[in-house]
Length: 440
Image (spheres, rainbow, N blue to C red):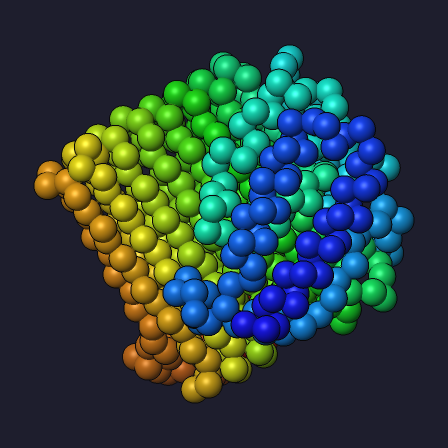
């Protein structure tokens, strides 16, 4: 516990310096939220092995490091920016370097009347009335990293689709690691508001950085109004020296449609927490995920799908491919309240291990308080099917090629569900590169 306490004190001291640079902003309602969040973090400190949700994800290496705040002048090389670009997506692309908005690298396309896509720092100044939702959908009470993100709230992205509006091209929120030789941390914050009947697609991506330790502590909040329809994609492919901790909080109103797909392809240690609340009747919610891990990577996914009202439908499918000494954790929980009668909920986690040293801990859970429901869950951890390998080998396909064919087919079930063609092709290429040698 001493390590955790020392690390906590470093961040409390850093907040005092952060606060001094806010000047007049210290009197704003947003800053009151910062201070409340800091108090929560000070109370709990960093998680340790004694915390059940973190028992299989050690933060010892992270808490030993001292990270410096990101600066606005650490632009990566042009080749690094080009490597992770998605120009074929079209539409609006907001680029952030170490969590700080970079207008010179961004493209803001023409958007329908009323639709907003801007930096969060700008929105705090120009649209404060729309930011009352900030902090309402990502839980801070028992989540110290979420509280830490709010305490150091500065920049990020804000997307607003007012009632009845729709966008035909995705809005891409592109977070890139800056070029620096100093261990750096950033706290990106994303707020997405989708009004009643509004429709759209948002892509949130994290990429770049290698060799120098980094901490990305990201929080995304999404609120869907009645009848809203949102496709949300999250792509994480940061460098092997990066610690990536992310929290996604989603609130869904009556008849909303939400489809989320998460792709974890990078970072030395990454943990993605998702909590979605179905707080109205007739909601359809889908969570898909794919994670590829090799070397000494550790990737963790924790999900909570909470049904509060009747006639809700939720489908969840996460798949992982691991090799070398990589480890992964999946903890998925479906919570059905007593009022949520006639809920239809499904959850599955499937894993492929390509080496004897790779390990996965899969823990799907159902917690049901209603008596008229249809709920199921399951998890599998195994190796490639010997019969399928033999079938391919018997037709003249070599061992390595046979493994590539089967692993790509396994991953393809998630990739093929991506709706924007440009993003689907990009992900297929990235996943293919990771699996090209039979080692994700």
